[in-house]
Length: 305
Image (cartoon, rainbow, N blue to C red; front, side, top):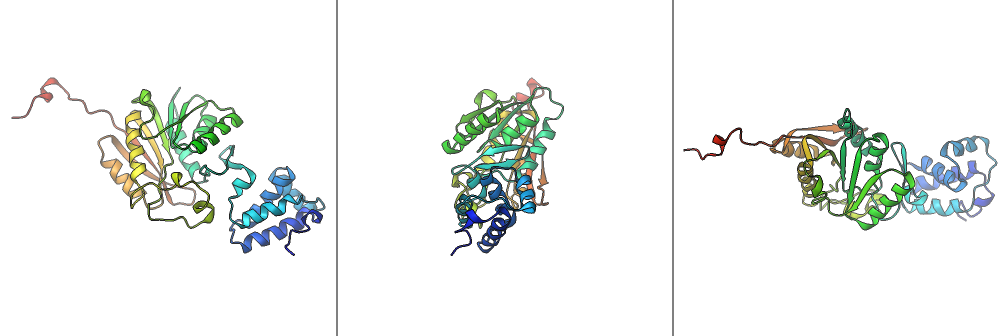
């Protein structure tokens, strides 16, 4: 008999206790949290209320709880089971076919907001937007911004559209290739954000939740170092940004040095600085667009003798 065959007769305290044990045995590192979140989901209450019910006891848990715990034990992402992901102040709709937003990406949003500070009506472009997490967070926290977001995957784009409807935020969503997007905005954008695919071609994610459920289109950056797409998106950002505009781009833990070196040496960029995420790991590069280097006078156009 499995621990949950009689879950309908168990109160929330005992059900969560058994679920935590079962999830831990399956290798889920966040077993206590996941067991509580799934209980809140099936009970239709906030997690804070579910935590209160753990103390009080006595409320039965629906049998659906057993099925969700079993799915989580098979390493289906928690967000796929609840249909929701939390990102900064927002609750996003997510599911199969879209990259799940991560807490470390919240640092990218913070740095982008700093770059937008003091601008009256800034223009923002989010490249490879996925669920729209970055774009919607920026619009939510900087309402004066005009925000554009482009995504190549039809499935991910559909999730972004669902989030726009859910959140009621005025973000222009476009289906297309970030490497050629928004020709009409060339030279007019204040901040370009991007959380690109950056896993090297030969690398495989360790966590089953990532390896088996995040779309490969959102994971692999191309090339042995995973930087083919990040560099391509940086080139598009250079075209879109006005002089002094900022590129704010996430990267893998070991890629920051290469990005800073390459962007810092390119004439399109004045500077490139790497910033850590919430765990102290290198995570986000901020690069400043340089001004066009036009000839100072007609004499500069003449060939040198």
